Length: 484
Ligand SMILES: [Fe+2]
Image (cartoon, rainbow, N blue to C red; front, side, top):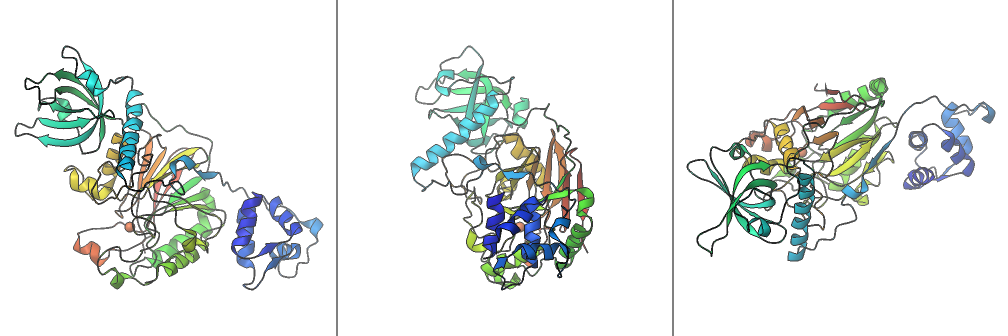
């Protein structure tokens, strides 16, 4: 805590006297307390004395004696942290050479294979080469899909590969329930089937699938109630700097936060990307910008975030409009943009797992929704929650390689959903909705930007100014509408 308090002071180029520090440390909510003090100091003030802290607490005159100092009775919780192993920030190793891609897809394959093998119905799999040596028995194999063909009679042919480099064809008869499965390239699946030898020895052998197993989450997965009384809110796609930023709706939400957020113990707010509108993201974007300078966009954002009550811890990660590499996983916003942010803002990469009072929150901006929608007939922009459900079924946020979502070939595939989240939130498509899927609270977290001309031309109808709030104890979800 000491480090956090002192770095908050340092960020403002101020110093805190040791006896002033003691008063801050004794407060029940030291970070919220020091932030309020810092906000109240004069611009040119450099040194914060004990008297300054007492003045802040008891008015300008500072008439109260030190002995009468009583700890304010606040009961705010701030038990939230980023799960470091899920955050790419500072850990990127890829240079884009072939070896990187090989490692990246090997990690994807092995991570999802582990999930598949933890499914009792599927159990242990065998390498493709070994499976193909049998013709008289059922085999369980894991493959990454290289290509897919649907034939006239509705049967499906897949070409799959395993981590040993063995390639094989998988045939799914039209009358098999397995043919109803959604298949996309670079997805990892489990296959139960029977191998067949090919008469032509130059052609690879194949497997006729009787069942396709998706990694998914178990049907028995459920939300376990806890004694937490806190709530967590999500504010996606704020788009500061856009001419269509909904200032009035935002201010209405801020007024509510100031007056009533403590009534529902709102202690955490997550921003799932596109916190600013950015520059040069789409053609002629400059015509739709009220702030045309990227640094100024983040400075303006810092000011908007200062209006959020100090006891609320915020988590901010980038989206495709933000000023970091577009390739996913994206690292946290650089300090050159965020130096004016308050210390109650936690910066991290996209995607990332955050733990709030023991709850696992997976937050992902959602760029890949574009690729899901353009490659899977059953999925549409009108139902982003259905897309998120497919991500859970495949336990991968962006399986398709080589589409609109650039994927950086890191040593580890950060887009695999390695652990089952309690809450899974996404943004990007500016929709608002939620669904309880096998215990997971899935949320599409709206936007604070009205429809832009670009969106109008692309028939994109946003549902703005809605703040989803989840109770961390019992999992109830509320969609709070602040549209003016
Ligand atoms: Fe956005």
